[in-house]
Length: 176
Image (tube, rainbow, N blue to C red; front, side, top):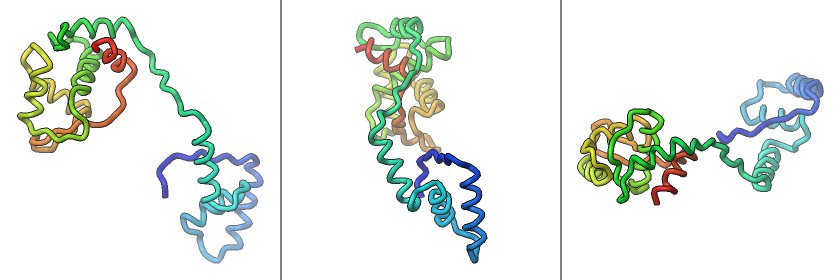
């Protein structure tokens, strides 16, 4: 079965309970997982679970996707952008955690997606992106924040494909 959350609504909980009680009394054995799903959705007017799922999928296709409403702190974005020089190199490692995180997102954006790197390759890539000469710090921070996936022995690295926060996107935009 799918792990996609599908909201279930019963207009009349009392009617749902009565229908379930009646169906469970008539059953010779305890219903299995799929049988129970079918009982629940039939009690609310669907033919079966597949009908319920098809209705859900159809509603998802028609409704617009939720837009991200992350707040963008433009003051923080401006501070972070100032940490990069005209060529896009990170000049120093910030003291504030929130600013560090945005700098890490910039480093993340410069790692090629769906590509494996060995430790030397990722270190060289990161070394070319900053001026304070601590690629090991950047590599470790990226792994600790789950922006890159690292094998347990540290021999392979791969960028994790997660959507960056709105503030990071604004930093990307201003650095271009």
